[in-house]
Image 1 (cartoon, rainbow, N blue to C red):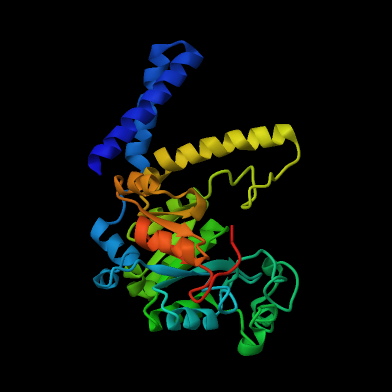
Image 2 (image 1 turned 60 degrees about the vertical axis):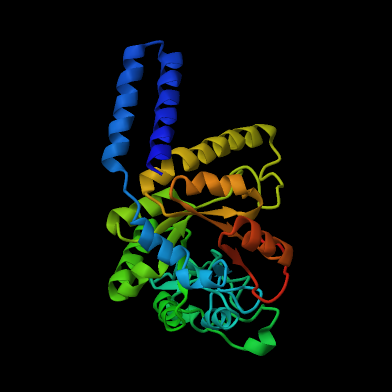
Length: 335
């Protein structure tokens, strides 16, 4: 791992040096800027948590006596139960999940709750942005209202973060906290949760698409295991591959940004944040890709793996953990 890390840095700083030379035509400026960036990286990056502790969370040893890989219920297993609810957590445990991925959000009065979307429309019988609803208003809504199995689950409340954590601890499930926004509030709340429930240090991962969230989490509490979430071409295309914009110039510009972001994830951001895992959209993962990150001491987790064929590929060929919407049957693809 150390040798590959050194190799990455040599390539990275060599590229920076050459680019600056080409732009400024000055070896002096190129040397100074490259040296500055090197010092910045050394001073402000966070070392990852010890590999053995990260492995206990990301790859529980008990699993491997039977040769299996960890299976994480995405949003608690949104096909098998109403997503991001206590019922989903219980169902995931009953169906054999080793962990759950849960989405952190906040009500208008700052209560941390589980909700994936910015609005409550898709998953509840309410409407409007969650950021405009008081917790007491949110609590009246039924989080099972639109689920395909609503007759079985009937009424489910939107749980608070603490309620969800306590339920996961009760069922000995690993938690992947997915942070979408409000990094300051999210980091503060999660830090307090880790202090209140120290078992989380050995049974949870904080993840986000936003590097600033992960960096701030490590800055606040360097003992927390973290992961960057990544999907190539996220800025220019939707998950199914269709362009986000019809404008040729917009597609070109966001495509360039996507290339830069992808390069940054694989060369700079992972080291700056000191991540232990990277959560990647399933269609971009291969054996070579897994090997690339293994050489750098980073675990790859695929999302969202929803068919038996894909699950067999992850379990028997890639041999890495994955997230799924269902532990019971094939379901629609999720991007």
